[in-house]
Image 1 (cartoon, rainbow, N blue to C red):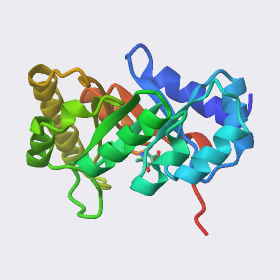
Image 2: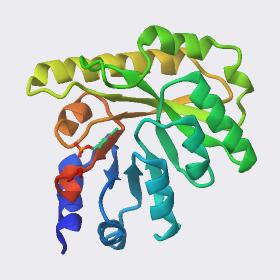
Image 3: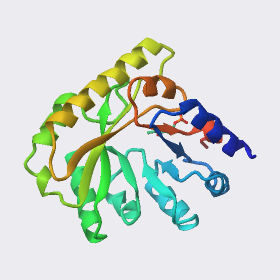
Length: 225
Ligand SMILES: *Cc1c(COP(=O)(O)O)cnc(C)c1O
């Protein structure tokens, strides 16, 4: 068994019987590594650059479910709209409208998560709680028939302080549960709570994550030029 497959197997056995989906974040990594994981039976992969995602998808099996996890510019939505499985990182109504427009062009409904800002760092994108409620109450939302909001995504602060990480993830889970009960529209159905990365996924699962996004623990450290 190759290194990538072994890492996936190890993480899956650690997740065990929890109903948590594993998205393998393959950004910056070569198609050959994705192929190894695919041959091993893994289908969910995530990228954070629209063009990189589009290029990789062209050269890899069509059964792969591609997730988008980074900051998405409105003019880049077109690269991924024809096939993307789930966009984890919607951080504005303007972006959601752009995704809806491309969904319409491609005659499909694109599943999206709203990214919530839960970390201490000010650099991370996302809605705060108030902005999220505003969006969900916006009358424009129900007119967007080519997107579906299926949940929330959040990234915890990059810290060794596990108590803080736990506090941030638990806060997001609480918000998720409230919204899931209070907001049911034709295009809003809270099912997925995407939280947890290589450094904090066990904490995230303990706090109610339904989907973890793991890169370096599967593919190794990333080298940025
Ligand atoms: C890169 C990335 C990940 C994976 O990070 P690792 O620490 O390598 O597991 C998860 N989520 C998002 C949004 C990312 O950009």
